[in-house]
Length: 287
Image (cartoon, rainbow, N blue to C red; front, side, top):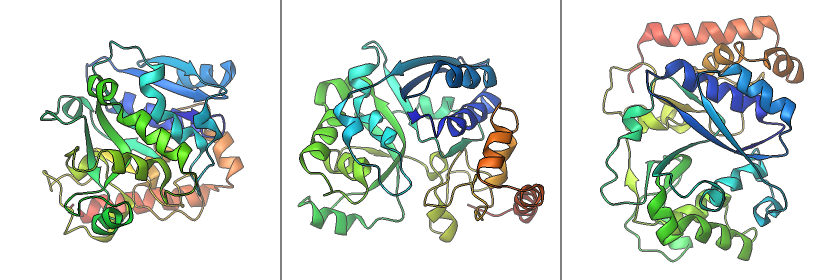
């Protein structure tokens, strides 16, 4: 889900998926807000090994919802997946565009959801007890980050949790601090499967590495890196140790020069991104 401003970052995410995948066929369902044929053609040219199906949305109430902080209004388009995507899709891996994939997503795709409609990774930056108290929910529960969602689409059609979250946002504008993420957590409270943090490794995980250990702590680079919070890898003030992976994938798309110029990223700054990444690998930081 993206708009024209974030299209280059979508290309980077897709390039990382293409580079990291194995022999499996990957079909991308892209729900788009104002992305023209030229932009879409540039994205497709960057990832010839991916099958991209595009769905263009205009005039939908989801697009009337206000953007939040650094979040584009296009984020709300994930809540209309059951309206837009074909009914015969069994499951979907949803990914935010401020992510980089470093290994095949096939093991994630094959995850047993154990009867739950959705799998996700806990958000270490939100206190679930406070969230439950705020929205009058049972206190026992976990709060997930919605940047990566493994969704049983049959269940999504049956219980309508995506449309429920959208309706909550429309009916209560400004009530949810983290917009659709809060709304999704409210409607899925105690009804989602917690997954290994490696599938949505957030910036907060870097602050508390001993607490959030993945199932394979020997991996120096998580499978899906999520550049949460306001600083992004395409910004000059970014400090994330894996920011270089964004630029490594960007240079293999038509948008490298555009993003560099737009965000004033100098060659010395790129060199610092690379050096920090290499030092991170050398130090063998454990997750």
